[in-house]
Image (cartoon, rainbow, N blue to C red; front, side, top):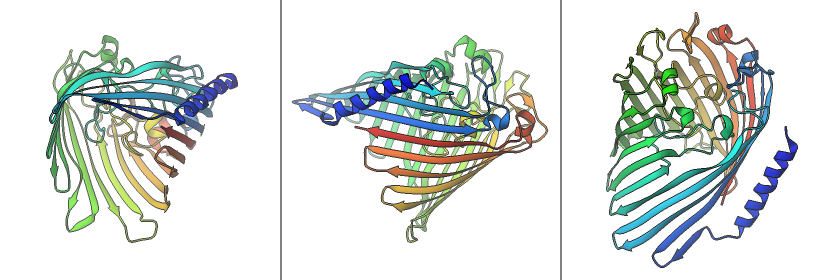
Length: 440
């Protein structure tokens, strides 16, 4: 680890936090309102038996390194937004943010970032207009549909950007979003582009949400275009059409403790010498025991992402995760180890069980268990003789010390099954993870 670089970033972080600690985060002057904030985060991860003992593989060079990866990440993200009232029902809006991020140490266990990776770059930059229930914005901006199952993260924080695990960059590029929120019905017509590391694809479509049985019923349709030529050769997307139906956080009056979520996605259409026929779905049940000590909550989810039984033909049957995002533990980075470094919501079937409880005010503890299988008997095109891939378990503590300070500590360990042993090795792949975030 470069201690000089870490010291410099720590000094910058401390100085920035100190200077903003006494600054007003909200400003008003007549018809102008503005908000300012600073998000910061620091991550420490110690991982053993990377890739089940096969070792850390550098994503760019292919070089295989040691079986242990110890790395740190840090980022700063200043943000500003404004609203200017032109008349009683008409407002100008806009916002901007920067991200300064860096990876230290051995680089992440997936080999996507190295010690030297990190940069400062413009993240959000958008402007628009609001009138009544309508809002039109243009530029680089955040956008999310539902739980982030398909669209939520426009930037994967790969390679030179640094901080792959922390993921501070999320904005889509060159976006146009027309949003409507009037009473119960809400929706968006959109055209947004993801980062070049994700293929530089443009997603154009529409989304609707409406309350239904205590939850939200949603429907989305989009088309993928303008994928960069190199990215389209690796993972064809041009011409893909995606349809999504979901029911989130619903339930029935007879069982108030039970929450149900379900979602289905279909990928179809034809592109450049390829056709698409992928699908994905999940069902999730949450049951809360509000009258018991610690108020435990039990969660079960089954998720399926289609695979391709013949990756060599020109019909692509595997589900493409497009621009899905991490939105909570297990969604949609499924497993802190498997989801970050081994499987990516494609060609997999996953059972998830989770139990969490409130240990003290602001402090929760939990455990989660995942059972991974491949949908088809290949791992990124490499044939395997068994679908069972791995089992991942984790224990964790989440501490919300205040509305500004949050920390999480977890230990995850993954046991390889037949498919993973064929491709990698037979050792237990584990990771001790600490993340601390502060927001002004």
